[in-house]
Image (cartoon, rainbow, N blue to C red):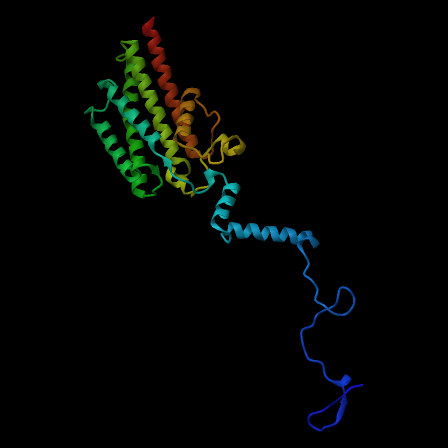
Length: 296
């Protein structure tokens, strides 16, 4: 046995009694030889650990811990376009509809139009110019002023058309309107078409707070339930309702006097659809009945 000399007293001590140097505990040896660290368990060792790891990755992705394009891709896969932030809707369709309304108002007979004759078209055109300046291409800017002007334009058109409808119906009932079947059908058809555009604008403005609010994904609960919302596999991934969808809704309600493939959800839009169907039915029945009577 090899001896070592203690530095203090010079006595020889056996090497076996030398204290061991403290160090990290290597832990039990899986092979049974008493040494070596334990390797960490892989994800394949525990199904629960695999699920936990996947959930952690999904959570990190949703919270933005991943890269930007990964987060955007996950958002597009998890949420349809109508429930997340998207680009604003182009305003050309609504603008063309308003311009068509102005043209129809200018062609209506003076006896059923608001006087002076150019008053309402000029006011409506001025409001349309203001809205175009605030959102020239896409309706993305959220502003109380824009919202107020947009609703004011719709209500102004609605008020002028309501006046024309009342004048026409009162003339039909009183027997002072409807000497010519052709003139009567053109006047009644123009008022009916303007009424359809008005309610399309109302539905477009009220559904989930309007086009600007829909672009920012502010209101997840819709006022109208479209087929593409119930069956997303029937629509492109980027589908979301636009003005033409609301015009189709208004047109079918004016012709069928009831909702077809688009269901109203809130009481407000149900009441509006009820009013639209009643006005459309009354106008069509009176105008057609009087025209048929004239032709006989």
